[in-house]
Amino acid sequence: MEEGISPLNKEEIFRILDQMNKCVCLVDLGERQGTGFFLNISFPKKNTIIPFLVTAYHTINDKAINDNKVITISILDKKETRKIETNDRIKYMNKEIDITLIEIKPSIDNISSFLDLDEKIFDQKKDMIYHKMPIYILQYPEGKESKVSFGIIKRIEEGRIIHNCWTHAGSAGGPLISMKNFKVIGLHIGAIKNRQSKIGRASCRERV
Figure (cartoon, rainbow, N blue to C red):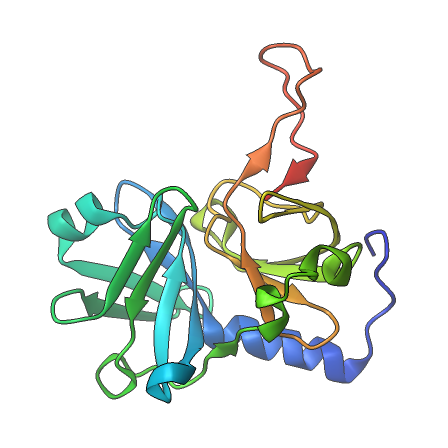
């Protein structure tokens, strides 16, 4: 186990595996692949909840949607493949924070399981709340089989969560999930290279 992570009991293991099997997917755009997940987002002012496919902007962006119109996602280690047509859906894309949201239509897309968002991410004191919190990431590194990686939050810089979970190319877009309540607290987008490392041998010990 990683630093700060206690041994898991059976209930916790089954819950994590269930999330991986039902709520996380491989996003395949042909020329590149990444991880995505299904998330319920509440809009209190409109008294509504909208389910979204969430991933990194550098995986699915404006150009990718305009070029493809259809996004291929695979669940359960590629055993279940779905095609999501992007027309007539609510979409949100932000290059600066590297996130893309695409509305899911459960009856059309045949998706019924969604992760929940941790309401504490909107707390002004989240830096203290999340400091050294044990977390895990669900992901499809290298576009291959699904993996779960455990670690802790090291710190928060300018709204970005710095963590030490193991990740690899293709992990971007995977959810950061709290071990305390099994809810989503962030989106993995990449690694931070050690500035003291020699060129060509950069260390990526920290990730965001």
